[in-house]
Image (cartoon, rainbow, N blue to C red):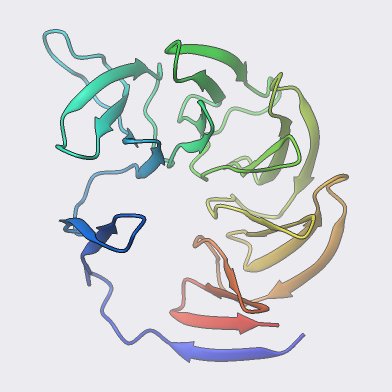
Length: 232
C-alpha cells in the first residue's frame, strides 16, 4: 500500500464556507461552515436534518432532530431523539439512522415521524459520536466503547462488532464490500462488511478521529498530529 504524507496548510480554526448547489449546477445558497455547535447535517429530498441537543422551551423538544426545508430554511418538524446527539444523521430513503450520547443507535421513519428501532449494548455504556454508513442492509458506525458496530438496517439487531484499542469517533466509509474506519488508537482499519473480519490496518502513530475519503483509487485521511495520508 503506497503512502503519501502532507501537512495541513490551514489553521485549526479555519472555517471555509459550504456552497449548496442545485442538481443542474446552479448555486442555491451559501452557508458559513464556522460554528461551534455539535452535530451535522444530513439531506433527504428537499429537507435537511440536523442533529442537535439541549433543553428547549415552549413547544420545542428537549433533544430534537430538526427537519429544515432547504429552499427557505424554515423548520418543518422535529423528531425527539431522547438524548444529546453529536453525530450526523445517516439518511437512506425515508429513514434516518444516528447514535446518541445515551449509549444507543436509533432508526426513524421520517414520513411517519416515529422511531423504528433502538440498539443499546447492555454490557457497555458509552456514547456513539461516529456517524453511520450503510450498505447491503448493514448500518455501520463506531462507538466510544472502542468497538465498530454493524447492525441490521431493518431490525437494528447486531450482526458483528470489531474491537479496537481506543474509542472510535471516526465515521466509517464503505466501498467494495469493505469498511474503512479510524480509531483513536492511531490505526485505520479495513474490515470485511459481511463478517467484520479485519483485512488490513495502517498505523498512523497518532489518533484518527476524522473520516476517510475515497476517490480515484486513493483513500485520504488525517491524524491528530496534523498529518494527512493518501493511501492506495
